[in-house]
Length: 141
Image (tube, rainbow, N blue to C red; front, top):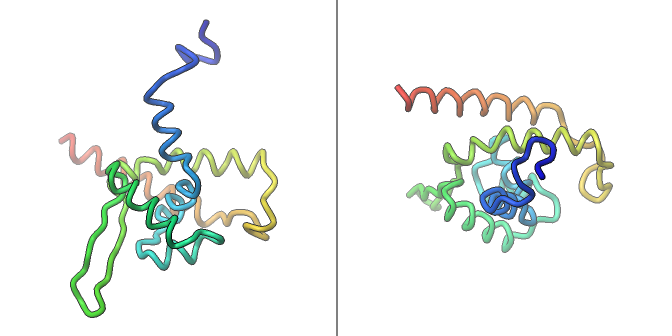
């Protein structure tokens, strides 16, 4: 019996997607990158309590799934940048929806933040949604 417009209670693709983006710290990493962070140190600085080891592990996973690209810029010292792919930018609507749901229904963890989520981050996500939609329409032409 279907409820709420969903055809069944279990969908393996949905389950895989939720497991991927729902891993510990992955949502925060995606949100940081959607807000413009590209360097390892920028991502670390934007997420309290995230260890370097775990960030490295998550970035490797996101790269494996084609959500993030890793670019080595040959200069002294060597610089490494992480950028969301089209697949990664396409998650902006999901991240925004979860952010809005959380602001509506959850109480912020005082250890994580003192002031909730700044509105400017949602505007950055909106901008990336427009870019992602634009790039999809360009690739269709």
